[in-house]
Image 1 (cartoon, rainbow, N blue to C red):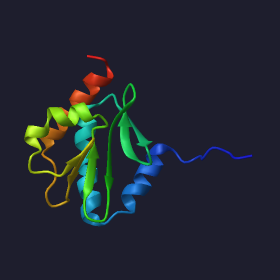
Image 2: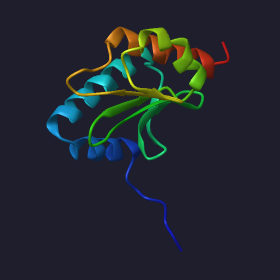
Image 3: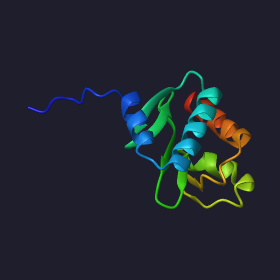
Image 4: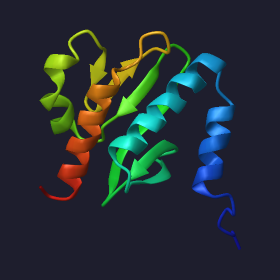
Amino acid sequence: MNAKPTTSDLDRIEAYLAGLDDDKRAALEHLRVVIKRAAPDAEEAMVYGVPGFRQNGALVCYAAFKAHCGFYPMNPETLEEFMGELADRETAESTIRFTADNPLPDDLVTRIVRARVAQNLGA
């Protein structure tokens, strides 16, 4: 019989961040704060194995990798909506890559998160 893990998502998020290099941890902690401000009703959660937020479904996620960090709007249409402002960033279907020394602008993150909230609310 397998028991469900007792570690909360917030504990898992904190452990994830604690395991990162200082520069990536600082960049992702800042991104986390910006997301919380943009979506104060969203719930922090581990989403697809990485830290993220949920509000009426998956909202956004973020993660760190060896050579970059990633911000995931979780919706290709959202990414397409902001492509003009992401011309200097490496992107994929629903991924925006950035580095700790070249983070995403707070205003852009805020607008992307708010767009995702509106999408999840069906607006």
